Image 1 (cartoon, rainbow, N blue to C red):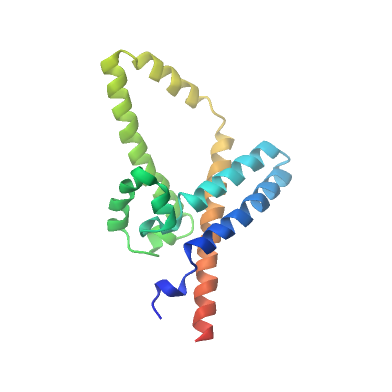
Image 2: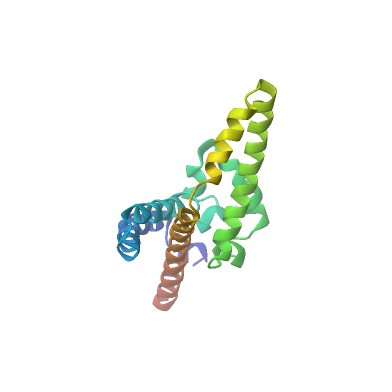
Length: 169
């Protein structure tokens, strides 16, 4: 039995994400006494499970969900082997995926700024960026919490299923 077949399927990870979203959102909302915060944690948990999964290091369901943008993950897949510490490590994997995605977002923003400058729309872009600077940092914490909890659920399910299948052999 190969290492890949001892892992949960992408559909299993998806089911766990669907189950976890309301549980995580309700818990975060109840603990913080701020239901909006719970919604943000739950939403980022879903984004983490469906789009920013540790399995972006393979040709996985999350990879294909990126549609025509999925090519941005090819250098990531070449740089990291599947289930390495850098992709599946607690906290580290999430941070690396966010830094990697930020690189692409920065390149995209640079392109948009170039087009805005060329077309005379740079003041509009600058105003939009100024508005983003005023966002409360606690929303970033809620987003990071949801993304990391999603990754931890993924890692836990990988560990449990692989141990279970090894034990059954």
